[in-house]
Amino acid sequence: GHRPQRAGETVTLKYRTDQAIDNDSTGWTTIFSDSVDNSSRHEAINIESSGDNLVSFYEVQFRIESVGGAEPTGFSFVAEEINSGLLN
Image 1 (tube, rainbow, N blue to C red):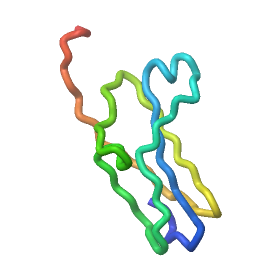
Image 2 (cartoon, rainbow, N blue to C red; image 1 turned 120 degrees about the vertical axis):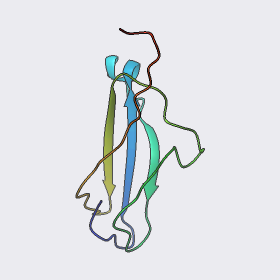
Image 3 (cartoon, rainbow, N blue to C red; image 1 turned 90 degrees about the vertical axis):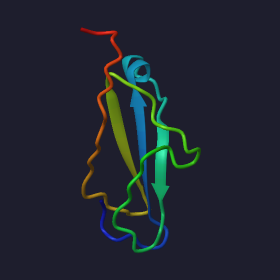
């Protein structure tokens, strides 16, 4: 969540996984950007610009970017564990 946004404020959520983390790559993928006035919460179930699901991962990092004075106040996520049979 974030405090209610004013005009010109944007909160963007990005993520990167496994190989991008290992290589300390700048390969961040945007999940969403929220610039709706008076918005104080945003939920996403996929990459909003394309509708694609987030990729499968062993490790994930999230990054919250704030523009124009937007103030993020919280973050949570839910992941589904998938048994791929690759690890014991």
